[in-house]
Amino acid sequence: MTTPQNNRVLVVDDDPQVVAMLELSLSHAGFDVTGCSDACQALLLAKGIQPAFVITDFNMPLWGTGLD
Image (cartoon, rainbow, N blue to C red; front, side, top):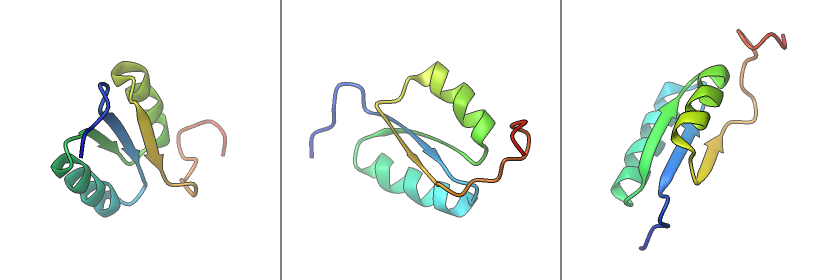
């Protein structure tokens, strides 16, 4: 499998086990993976690492976002 030039992936899920599983699987496939379990942290990380794509949970808690 070939990966794109920017092979950075951001994985976001409030379940740390899901994040760990996706990080492991995608890393073995040749992607540079960053994972986190917090929506606010994900926004900050995305600005810094500029991922090619993001894998995220749709049902994330809103704690700390100011949106709850």
